[in-house]
Image (tube, rainbow, N blue to C red; front, top):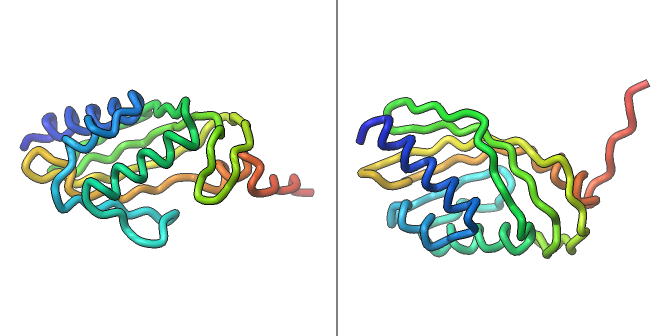
Length: 144
């Protein structure tokens, strides 16, 4: 696949997230899909893992939305810099809903494409800011 094809598939994936449409997203991923993030204890694997993750975030943030700030293709990889927003209205990994909406968080995905499918991704995002915004972590005091 060309870099332009990979960018198109990447955009479709983000569109599926913004539409809260797991089925559309799952059509884009490979059977042996793996997603790694420093926020998860183990990698997500396959379509079931991807569906469960997507449903968890959509349930926790029913108005979840990602704005794409930058996408760069390099061979079989697409790097996406994003900004996510949403209101915490459902439980998130044991954290009860706070009803809080913040300015959002920034993140970056590095995604590998194989045969027109999303094969693997590495997700890096500012979880500390999210936890502060939903009230699960204190805001640090300003430096003196």
